[in-house]
Length: 261
Length: 83
Image 1: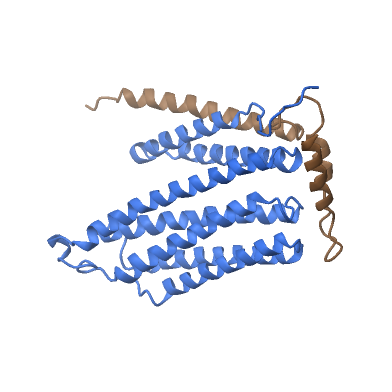
Image 2: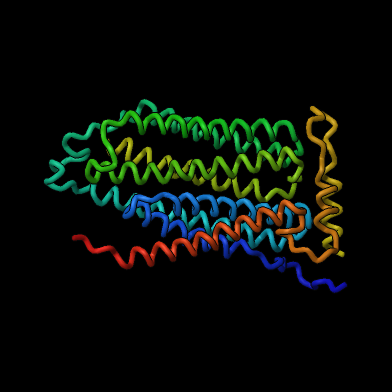
């Protein structure tokens, strides 16, 4: 039997890049069918196949690392670079929406009444639910740090408790934000205010849901003894992502909710 | 050699904690044995028959869906004339 003489991971051929690419194609075609022909079947199919691809791809990575031992320090270093670059790309994604917000709010046009918030728009009070949301996410940043330290110290029970608290806080944020969306007196089609508000906070909310899902996966992996006290990169990646989501919210709160009111 | 040393270290670190509830047994060593079996099966199918079924379903849905979207594109490309 031959053995590799390097510390990199040569993966088995996998069908998931293909199914992932096809599901992305189905997603774009599905959106067209929905927008122009009032048919939801392709879009629904795309969401299903995308979910199936993600589940099986990441399941395979868990198998390759935890069960097959392929994640050497070299491989882990690559994964760290990858996650950092991904989060950086997401930061740039959000910067675009912040640019749009500041472009319109720093020099409000006559059509808006020359003011920001525009005439007729009643923004949410930043000292009510938005402030609570801020404290919820900040607290979740503390609890996830507690979880990490517990994990590094080999304290299984505390790791699970702290992770659970983090997840609950994330879910609480999502529920609060959903109720706020219901309560606003303005909608996404209420001019540039509505557009910038709902697109920026909407994408943030989506990232909170993605981050919460990642944390739930980590919780299940911790339950089933996947993580060790010094090798748990999946958890670290989830924690980095979660802190990123928290920081984006802080920028949203300061810019759109506070300064923008 | 290095890889098996690393795996051994991880197994030793993953022993069941003596404290707290017995609800979850550490099944990682069993999984490690299953997925390290030298049978040439690729990782996406190595878990058993459920893997094969899920793979088949995913492939059928994605390829079938792509064919369906091509059909819809053809239909949309030749709109019916009104009146």
